[in-house]
Image: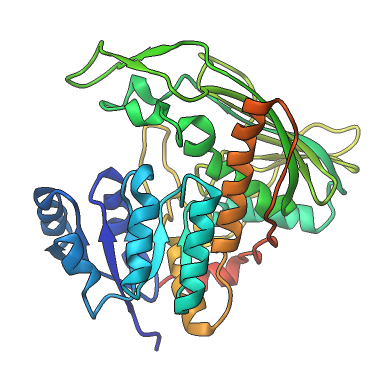
Length: 377
């Protein structure tokens, strides 16, 4: 029987409820304590889910915690993850892991020196839809992917978020906020990126908060809100990546991959499920019958209708990988490469030149139906 690893959480904001609610679905995970800079927030979240509330320092010093999840704001991710490793604990962070490649290298070296593991969201590429798309590619159904496009098209989070300033500061924007979902999915499907180029802009110098007590207040835009990038993969594929919060409406798909034998339509990488379609020469796009994959099944109601939400799957895979002595799928290697891709896109937007990446990685091992079932209780 698999022994549960003790899990602690630092950061008791909105996303913490998803981790606390979903972690019990998975083998090997037992959330035991939460902490926050606000003790009141930690106490409220702990009472809601029946775990301990502690200060950050006390949580880091707990002997019954093996992995600590970092759910703080992006600007604090590096510092908190460093503290977690220095306390001798494995670290799993919400995206983005860090805001610069240099910070990521520091965490990598510290983890290696202490024999610790580091993982990072997103884990949505482990979802049934994205793993089915991966299997279609690996089977050669649409041939070799030569080109394609991926698109984040919206008008920003200020319409619904009551305190959206951080979304428009350096280290955020559509590339660093939503980009991790798209880049992780591209790495899962196509492998590592070789070089990138980009043009960046912002349609508006200020945004208006659209909800909450600050509705109507203006906030400054201090990072590009529109990024049009070109990614060249080591496989030879070239992908157009559009990340824009300057769009009111569009009819673009999230992902279209064009191969030598057909086209693969991949659903929104922010979710575990969705519709996978294939179009072969002379035919129309055909919806693929969903796999009987456990991370394809709807388990949550939403305004969009029932959806599959298995966040913490990456954490569960990390826990099992640690006990089995294998590499986990949301690994530091792939996360660092994703950070390299995103920061290089922004650098290219500043310089107007191609940027060759300094990191690489392997594709994660596919998560088949039986592999996914093995993660669940």
